[in-house]
Length: 424
Image (cartoon, rainbow, N blue to C red; front, side, top):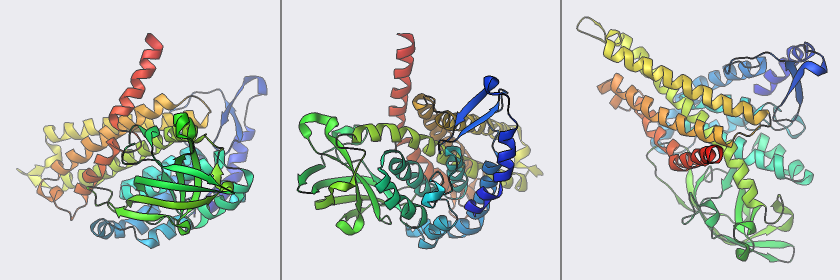
């Protein structure tokens, strides 16, 4: 669906690009696929999107409502991702959004990926984070750091059927990611990996794994290297976690016992894993901001209509000032989180510094998600507390936003460093 939509708007996009000022008074925007687009030096609002992006939003929203929504409660209760949902995501072109058409992807913008993540999260944050990790972490690492041979071998599969997983965290290295203990030792034309990983998203269903291991502990974090591995090489699922929220999204501990990986599967060069992890997690944080934004909007959209249907004392409860003001405040918080998230996404596309903006967006959106989803339960009263409406699930799912891909304290620390750099 999305691939077809992207092609359908090509003529309109071309005509837009032709309506530009001369080179001397034009600006450039570097999109994720490295195309340079000229546009008039005219300020636009942060919620201005291309025709392609608007079409994507509409198509993903329909997909989420028609395909994902009927399965949400069952997947949550069974703590299992329905294989048909994974298959449908690939069929809709949503698992290779930024990947080039030559490699089977949609060849669209980073903001398009953020839009898809947000829209999926409005219906199910579990499906959203699966799509997020696959697109903003796994695919991006292979696209950005892989050799041509690696890209040609893996990107088509990652676009069409092979789910990916990003293996960085360990029992002793969470926020301190570079304290990882997993080791890799050279053995002829192979590397032998031993160690464990923890809190790994998508790992139960994934067949493709990016594994970070240290090839020379004497060099500290400069020995960390990224390896491509597949489940059939011998990756073991040690434990599948039972969680408060995002239950359908698998989170597992992995064990590597003499896992043999070809030397050709080193990604980005020996000792470059720390650089890959630092850069890619900044992008991933924008994805989590989008997930939390979509989650909060989903809770808002479910609870608010009920407050206009539910009457007490002869009038809808939403008409009482106390509740009306709470909803107005939530709308302000949602809009602020949306602007922060899309500002970070556009800065990333433009090739500008965005680490600060990504940290701000993730921190703010995760806070808004918890506040709005919690308030939504109260707005719906006893009904909101039941599992039947699905409102309470948004609150359960919201808690992870302050934890993964950098805790809230890590985001505040990052923001504080920028303040110190500017003012000290």
